[in-house]
Length: 212
Ligand code: B12
Image 1 (cartoon, rainbow, N blue to C red):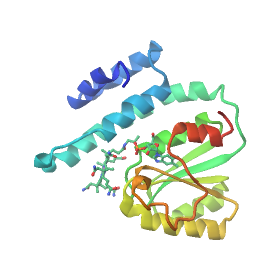
Image 2: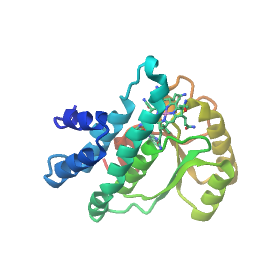
Image 3: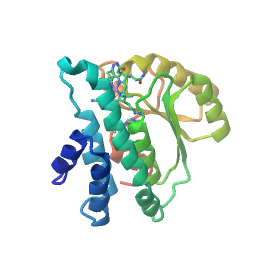
Image 4: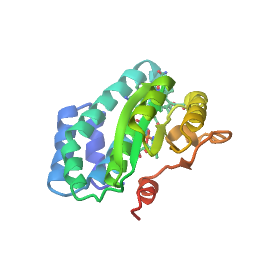
């Protein structure tokens, strides 16, 4: 756990968006943490380790929304740091398109992953959450990416993911399909799926980008 995480968690638990943002901005400015730390050791755990007692089911969903809103504000507000780091990144000439399939509204992981692809030297574009199959196909046709990266969190969306990968591979055999996201933690999730890479960690993305 990062030394500065508990204080951040406390602010988020209080739903104090302003101070949570100011706290991490200060840590970045003072170079006490790197942008990578912010993603991996602050934003990811503050969402993934959020637990709501079953007694509080009624409030869990809106509380999750509030928390996500704090995280999204931090993600957008720290984008200038990404721009700054990207200036020194050597491009690898490869284009990747990141997208969440239809009904997949969980997009924080996809946005962070898009940033990692950029930092790994890819020309990375995030398309969006809840993207219908036909729109994904149209985007692949128009953008001609080298890689299509699908982010899937809810394992109920694995069925549509399978349909998308089959169609993409059928129509665009040269496009490499990358899958990632917590849905693939479910045993058997990758069975019968047409894909080229299942990546989990930022190091996998850097390796694929040619940086070790
Ligand atoms: C935030 C959240 C929400 C928010 C999402 C807001 C948004 N705009 O993104 C809201 C409130 C909308 C929401 C809604 C729902 N949620 Co929700 N949600 C979460 C929560 C708390 C955090 C998810 C998150 O963003 N994590 C932070 C990111 C940074 O981490 P990550 O997603 O793991 O991503 C990392 C890696 O997986 C990887 N990665 C991700 N994608 C990719 C792609 C590639 C290519 C690669 C290489 C890597 C990669 O890299 C990322 C960065 O390290 C999880 C809890 C959990 N433990 O996951 C539940 C959770 C995912 N939700 C769940 C559920 C059930 C729902 C709802 C059905 C609830 C409901 N009853 O309405 C709806 C479904 C909405 C929908 N149709 O998609 C379940 C899913 C269970 C399942 N069936 O799989 C979870 C696990 C909660 C639980 N314990 O039950 N949710």
